[in-house]
Length: 464
Image (cartoon, rainbow, N blue to C red):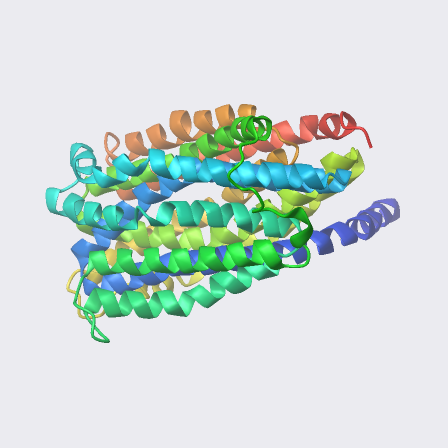
C-alpha cells in the first residue's frame, strides 16, 4: 500500500511541470476556441429568436461550411507540430518555410471549394432537405464564401503564434471580436441601428466582416510581435518553396481528411435529422452546439498536446513525449467529467437559452434537445480522448494511419449505426446520437492504442 502511494506521489511530482506547461499553453487556446465558438453560438441564438425555419437553415449551412473549412484546416494544425519541432531543434528558417506554405495551401483550398459554396442549394436539395430551407442555406453560404480564406489563414497564424509561445494574443483578438459580431448580427438580422432586416443574409454578412478584421489583427501580430519579428514571415511571401509546400501538404491533407471524416459524420447526422423535420433539426443543432462548446476545451488541450509532443519529438525525448501524453489526458478527462455533470443535471436550462418563449414550437424543440443532451453527456469522455490522441499523433507527425482509423470509426461504425438505430430500428433522433457515441468510442480506442504503442519509437527515432 505504502509503495503504491509513494509511486503515485512520485508520478504526480514528475508530471507537475508538464501539467503546468500544458495548462499554461492550453488555457489561452481553449479561450480562443471558446470565443470563436461563441461567435457561432451568438449567431444561432439570435437566429433562433428570429424564426425556426431560418434557424434550421443556419444549422444546415454552418454544418456544410464547417466541413469544407475542416478539410482546409489540416495545414494549420499540421504546421503547429512542425513549428514546435523546428524550434526545439533551433531551426528558424524551417519555421518560416512551413508557415508560409501553410498560408499558401489555405488560400488555394479556399479557391477550390468556392463553387461548392456557390451552388450549395441544389446540393442540399438532392440530399433530401426541404427546398425553402436549402435556399436559405445557400444564401448564407454564398455570402460567407469570402470568409473562408480569412478563417483558414487565421488558423495558420493561430498555430504560428501559439507555437511561438503567444497563444494569449490569439485569445485577445478572438475575444475582442465577440461583441462586434454580436452587435452586427443583431442589427443585420433584425434590422436595427439603421440596417435593413436581412435575416439569414445579415448573419452571414456580419460574420464574414468580423473574420476579415480578425485576420488583419493576426497578420499585424505575426509581423511585429518581438517573438515573431526574427522569422520575417511575410518577407518575399510570394516566393514558392516547393519542398516545404509538399511537406505541409502531405502532413496536413490527411489531418484535413481526418477532420472531414469526423465532422462529416456530424454533417451526415444533420442531413439524416433533417428527414425528421425542422423541429428535430433545430433541436439537434442546439444540442450539438452545446456539446461543441465543451469540445472546444478538449480541442485547446489537444492543440497544446501537439505543441508539447512536437517539441519532445524534435528533441528526441521519449520520456517528455510520454509525460506530454499523460498530462493532456488528465486535463481533458477532468473537464469531461464536469461537462457530463452539467449535461445530466441542467439540460433544460442549457437548451432553453436558444429559443424565445413566444415561439409555439419552442416546447417541442427544448424537450427533444434535452433528451439528446443525455447522449451528449455519454460521448463527452470518449470525444475528449479521441481529440487528445489526434493532437499527440500530430505532434509526432503521424497523420496517415490516424486518418484511416478515423474513417473506419466515423463512417463504418458511427454514421451507419446511427442510421440503423434511428430509422430501420425506429428509435428516431436518439438512435442517431447513439450511433455517434459508438463512432467516437471506436476512434478513441484505436487512436489512443496507436499513440501508446508507438510513441516511444517516434521519439527515439529523432536524434537529440
